[in-house]
Length: 209
Image 1 (tube, rainbow, N blue to C red):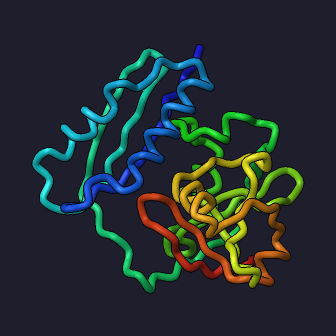
Image 2: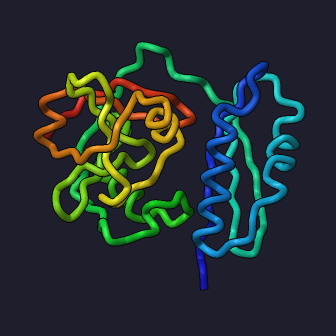
Image 3: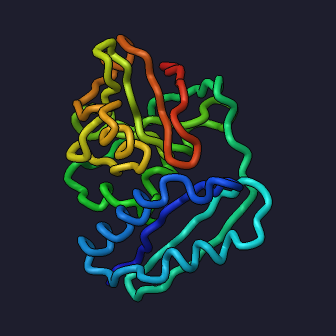
């Protein structure tokens, strides 16, 4: 029995609508197909209804389960300032690269919650998880990117055990990022960024214990 739902977390802006909507819908549809779910044919209508009376930026969360049920919730959202720097740390919790479900955004989040709980919000804005081989995977709520001086950001492949984030997909398609394995030594040698579709790309400083 499938005991989880798929998730898409979107940003809605007055005048712009849903940011990266096409990529979010494509990922949701692709994930549903690969997991044997129905297709989320009512997703757009449900999203539009959730923002019908909105006057300011929103964080909109859509869940879709194996029975085809869609739930949408929204909350006010304050975008990060362009010069925001996040502090990130490394989790002791590890990801299993053979767990194929890590490549989908689902409500099964125990491993991410365990990693996040290793540090307080004052100690870290996000926490980076490694896999069993010590390879960099992702943050608990973000994808990881490294500027190693080669002109394109580098981001880990999903085969390491991580989600194909929507911002990550956009940057790869725009040839602003390329896929490549990352180690902790790589992070120390380049400029680190983290990010997701809700918040965009964020400069990050890695603090080691």
